[in-house]
Image (tube, rainbow, N blue to C red):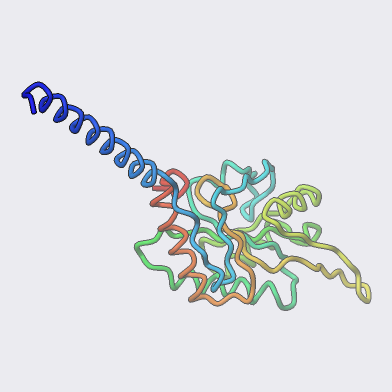
Length: 221
């Protein structure tokens, strides 16, 4: 075999090896660049959105009597629950579960807020919401305001509520799930009952770690 032919064959071999290496490298790069799917937390009755859902814009009133908009929910994780202070059973149990969850969260996790969106604005004044949410902790808050706006915000977190009167007393049928908003004030997860504080804490930890690794901006890191 002539020297020039050997050089040509060697050059072709190097070219093939280079092309092969670039192809493999590109595949590895693209694979590593693909976002990791949201964790399957069905064992905790939790559904996590791969792409968080937008919360509608709104203007409501906090338990402090201050105007609150969607922008005010940004910068931290928030558990949202739709209910009302005169609720005889579901709401007190749900709020108590959130308080226990708050006590179980690791200090390494961001400490979330807990937000009660009232389904009974006629009776749930800011003062009444302040007394009610303050019982559960300083990071528990409430929102009240126009009934139509409250319905729209509830719908935005996949919740509904219906008013009915029984023996002259107002009762409110409402959804029982928790909605988890990320620090961009977007709906990141829905957590269905039954709610167990230890499982809620575990679910939040896994959601945060996934968001931190795949969506740093949305995780608040």
